[in-house]
Image (tube, rainbow, N blue to C red; front, side, top):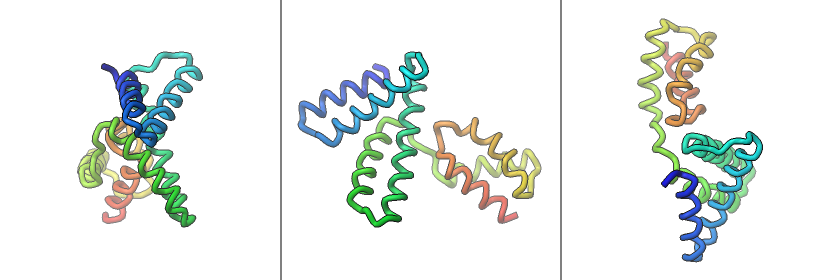
Length: 149
């Protein structure tokens, strides 16, 4: 069963179980997948569906930050619930320590010691860590490593 079929099956189960939060979140995810398919005129495979889910998760993280800054805890709680459901369909993300270890290796390979060359490091790291680590975490890890040099 591919990821899109899994989302549909889980939505049907949530509907039968009366789990409205999960049903609504899965319905929104399937709509985002369908919209991407219509816009790009393609049928997404698992990697494409995973990219859509990753984008949706990123949007939720940003919304959580914005809502918490604005003091809207009830809205942030709803976004956190949606994020938890989305993340259950994504592969486990790397920890910051794991990202730092890989980033340190790339920095050593490239022989970079200056913040102005951070783009070069990020350009090498992001394709390597795509789908395994959030870009913001990679950015923070690289900054910390370069500042400590």
